[in-house]
Length: 415
Image (cartoon, rainbow, N blue to C red; front, side):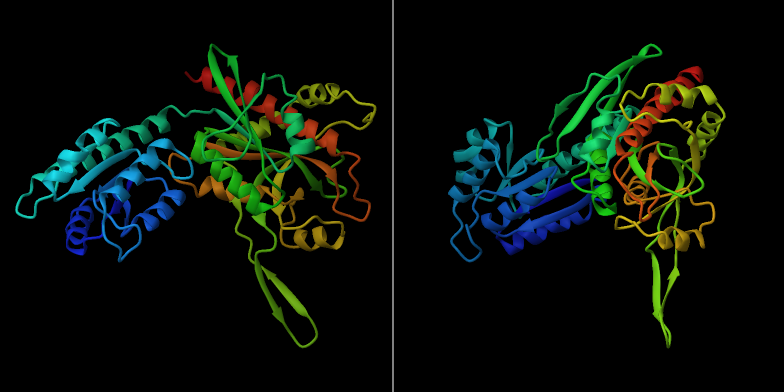
């Protein structure tokens, strides 16, 4: 539940503190640093709910322990910078004079110094009270986040242009923002629907591919705890099954490179081992209902404003999406995948990574994740960028209307 950092160079005292922490099942993890350099390294990499700081630590292990090293670290934490501030800090010292000297220094920041005495259990009781409080507070916070998520819907795309550009053209008043310790630029908006305010976040991954998509999905979940995640953008359709701009809704997603390559006398043979991640049944039922409403798709197509006129009708397809690590311009690749997934509707580089991340993240998890992409090519030698804008538009527009007119409406009808 909570993470703790102990900065202590005395091995006997460290052992006693370790024993206390080991007994508490609410502590998810604790780290121990023997000097201020190791402590800084850990504080640059990790967030801790509680820091237990000895008031005399060496700068480097083996040096003389000095109070200045502890106080300098405390000041550095309070000033901010490279170090990630813990939620709470407790000083722990066996020296009365040090406690008296630095009590005001800690009190200034509303921290506490506990007097450590081998012959007394008072310090253990104080520390346990603080740890129990932090565990209960964290549990309450997580429960509140589960019941009242911060964000209703998160849009994720693989490309800033044109995919995210068309999300930001949706009828929402987007504003860019950043969050502490994260260089990613996010966009947020709110919209009043059905008597309540719905919140949105939109972001593009730093590059294409499953790793980047999975990483940005995890960041979005960790930072915003969205109820729903939708990935929009472009994908390759299956020739003969769809047309440019058609909507591809991923009923399931799999990594088409997953499997084993074996070599026989004449050639190498790939034996696939697909492990699909499926769309939630609740969302799938709404998707299937949308597919039967012709006006829903006609209105989206009618909203396309461009010199690139589209003569064919807009269609929506629901089925498996295959994800892989490279851009495809080879007819034989889709044909090879279809041998093992005959209902395949499209190929991209990200959907499986988004689905996998959303299904394997920490709790509270999103209610559902869905990939709604559109056909910009057919993964063949005729591959071009001519339909990327139209596909990005139809994808974003369908996703927006799907959630605002279907999912959110149904939620309020059920109340």
